[in-house]
Image 1 (spheres, rainbow, N blue to C red):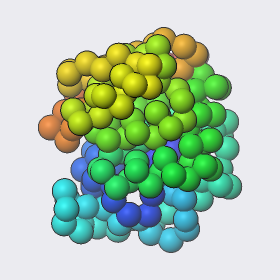
Image 2: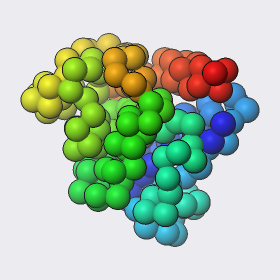
Image 3: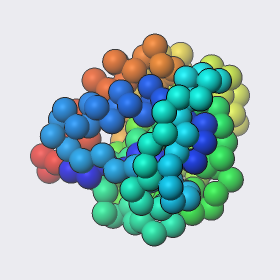
Image 4: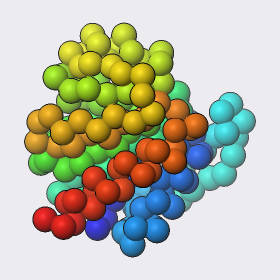
Amino acid sequence: MRIAFLMAPEGVEQIELTDPWHAVVEAGDEPVLLSTEPGQIQAFNHLDKADQFPVQQVVGEASADSFDGLVLPGGVANPDALRMDEQAVSFVRDFFEQGRPVAAICHAPWTLIEADVVRGRTLTSWPSLRTDIRNAGATWVDEQVSVCGAGPSTLITSRKPDDLKAFCEAFVPEFQKRKQG
């Protein structure tokens, strides 16, 4: 399976990229780093610059139907920038319209809210997003992981870096269900 990882050029929380990326690789699948611009993305360890990672594909040149799942890492700046990019928002929306699984952690649900795909769903996030999520018509829960199968696409969400182990253990099997048919 090919799994899209969508990020803005700056502001992704490094561990929220690398841990899920490794989980996808360990499952025998192919992660692909997409961004709104070519070049490199800058990761952060909270507010400190960390590593850079090469962009493999620009989201404006990508199609959701060429991927089996989507992972949206957090960090504050990353989803805030993505929700301002219409091509990124459209790409995310297409996953839901095509019934493909999506996993989002921390602040990443901001992009989901902008794509208008959370209404009627249950999800979790960094606690400061709870009002945004409720105002978008979803139910917010304070849990390590929420798996919501409402609608055509399964949505797997998690709160924060401390929940990464549980997040990876939840989204990888959900993505594998797509491979199995």
